[in-house]
Amino acid sequence: MAILESSKPAKTVHPGQTIGILGGGQLGRMMALEAKAMGYRIAVLDPQPDCPCAQVADTHIVAPYTDVSAAEELGRQSDVVTYEFENVDANVTARLCECSYVPQGASLLHTTQHRVREKRALQAAGVPIADYREVTTLQGLRQAAKELGLPAVLKTSAGGYDGKGQWRLTAEDDLGLLWSSIAAAQTIPGRHGTTKRVEEAPFIMERLIPFERELSVMVARSPRGEMTVFPVAENIHVHHILHMSIVPARVDAETARRAQEIAKQIAESLCVVGVLGVEMFLTRDGQILVNELAPRPHNSGHYTQNACSTSQFEQHVRAICNLPLGDVKLWSPVVMVNVLGQHLPSVLTHLKHWPAHWKLHLYGKAEAKRNRKMGHVNVLCDDLEDGLEQIKYAGIW
Ligand SMILES: Nc1ncnc2c1ncn2[C@@H]1O[C@H](COP(=O)(O)OP(=O)(O)OP(=O)(O)O)[C@@H](O)[C@H]1O
Ligand SMILES: [Mg+2]
Image (cartoon, rainbow, N blue to C red; front, side):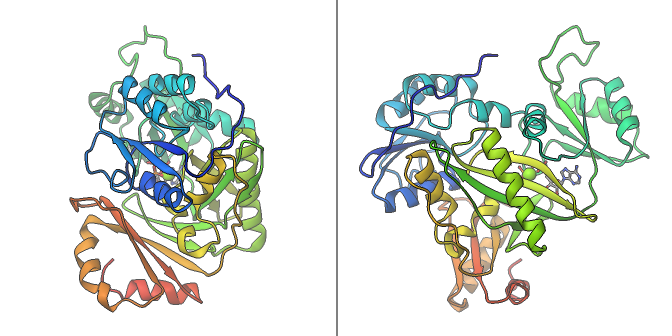
């Protein structure tokens, strides 16, 4: 498949001009808030009338993400177009790159939409990743299990998030049974005998990494090649959803430096424009393995809003507008903790007693469903262990 790059030369987009955002969730909202503070106007495309970003945008095109003519309208209204999620429809990306200015291009999206393409790109960038095999058939699954050993993780190549589309495999599992249950729930190309030639495997199997910590690094790159890398975050997941990010990560300085170096290497290799989130595993023997990429601001970078000179959202705006990147100094240790639907009632009750260094961000979502990300709190602290204690005894999480 031909990949459309942003073939247009980089241009500088000035305050007063309009930034178009594809997707109106919390990431779009926080991008928009920073951009508005800098004097930009915001147009957003999202199917939901009162979505988080529309509440702070100047104009809102209410249409499905796959609507090419709505995307064209977004392009007409905007001097630069960006996105807040990676699963942008390929036709929409292609059309936007053609008829408007998308400095991030289509190639990075194409790569990060599919785990096989992403793994290959990471290998080409020369960074370490977990051993994996591509899986298309039951026979392939058995072979992968033999070669990698169990336990392992099977992941859908496209569309997974928050641990959805993942299966932990152990030596006790009946792979045939598992494969047919997955096949029943998914559309696996060629699963009945494989007459159909597919471009990339629909699944990958990874060796299960007994990691010591999960880390992430946000890196930003501008069209002129300027790069900044934010401090390393240590991430704690609960039920496959990010619960907390602890910054600076509790690792030695050399490990932190290596993690940042890896993120920069990837951003350079993939010619990233804007912000890129790089998720990593730190193993017990000190190895860093890259897990996956997010070609946009990332939940584990929300701490930057209150703890750094420049937030990841402002940095993203600066990068896509071709402005000089901001300073990324960390002013204070910080713990970011997510507010999910089930946490919101107690957050609202306890709010009046919170200390001044607890910074609440809410996304303006009407319905507080279970496990839905409603907001987050950045707990600024002098000492991380103290911050973690405060969260533990807050009676919310
Ligand atoms: N190979 C592995 N070994 C050990 N743990 C893993 C492995 N792959 C994934 N995990 C665990 O599952 C989590 C989710 O995996 P991953 O990031 O690949 O998927 P995801 O569903 O796209 O997640 P998200 O979109 O929320 O970041 C990881 O953060 C990690 O805790
Ligand atoms: Mg992940």
